[in-house]
Length: 182
Image 1 (cartoon, one colour):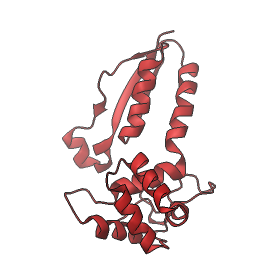
Image 2 (cartoon, one colour):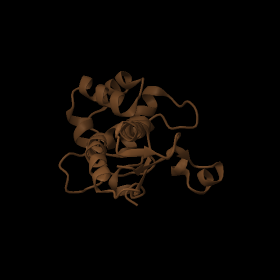
Image 3 (cartoon, one colour):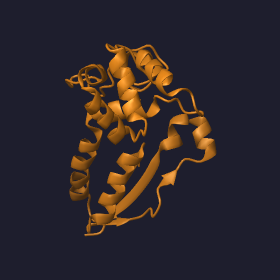
Image 4 (cartoon, one colour):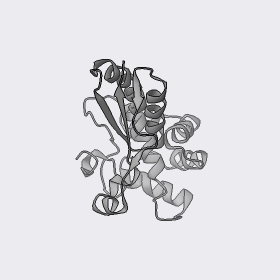
């Protein structure tokens, strides 16, 4: 629901503040990162969390366009810098990177996985849906390396074409399941 709320600034299709916080009590917003990080730090963040090869070009364009206050302003700057290519908006990876950084998503996943494994009863199962490769890699590696868990999904389960048509956000979802054995 938060992703669809234009006021939260998660979508570049809506005129909303550059917020992107899942928890409105958190200190840092996407606007803070976009406007306050130096160009190199911003490029590194976009490259690391967005896996965006054009991160330096994007960071340079953002630095020249500051201050940016809305999601559509940021999306437009990125679109001008990169141009339109393909069906995926050129700002997608940058928005992903900012959302991950603002909400410390990877850190949260890394912290919660051991807690899940410890609280599962023997025979209990955990199913985790990841929405991008960084999350999925953390889950996959944790499941494989934890001797208390048996991986039940050799490869992640992904949405069918029919599911994607019914729910476009399912396009990037990957489900992994593991069972506690010891």
